[in-house]
Image (cartoon, rainbow, N blue to C red):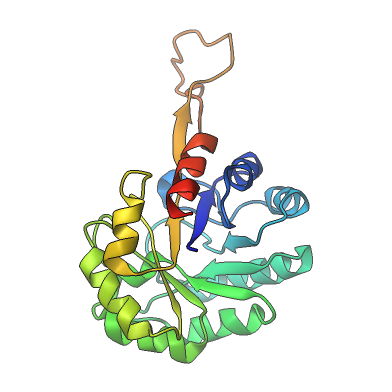
Length: 239
């Protein structure tokens, strides 16, 4: 049976993911920017309320994945914080100026995460040679890599993902992500032979505030949240 991981941008979204049948949550903030590390309170509340595995995105800012020393120190502190809260794993990644996997930074992340699982995120899709990078991640000790096969969506990158799954040979989990929906997840599983899948299953909710005079300030547009029914549909398709 395949596993569904849901990218949740809040504790409320994480709980919706669990109720809908997700097998794991990747918790983040600012999902619309690709995700950054969530707050202490969000992580603590999610950990308290979830019975499924909780992985936390460790990303200090939006943008690229070339980090300065101060940013790496902050990431190491965030990883330690996740361990203290009892998280099951972290989602990390760093690249060099040439776009290669930053071995030194990633080795530090993995040492800090000892005892927890570690996923390398979609920075992987920016490397010049994904097959070489996959061997690097295996050598470093990552348990999983999230990828769209270097394409805007996992469906578009299905052929590349299938080659990575074959290359991995069970040494690391290759998890397709980006643009996965209930209507394409079964075909994607058949095309890639992947066993884990990553989806945000999100939808935009209108604001519940009654006093919004034209939203002239642009601060009352509602929120994006994990959609329970979409998670259920995804989990059902994989069952």
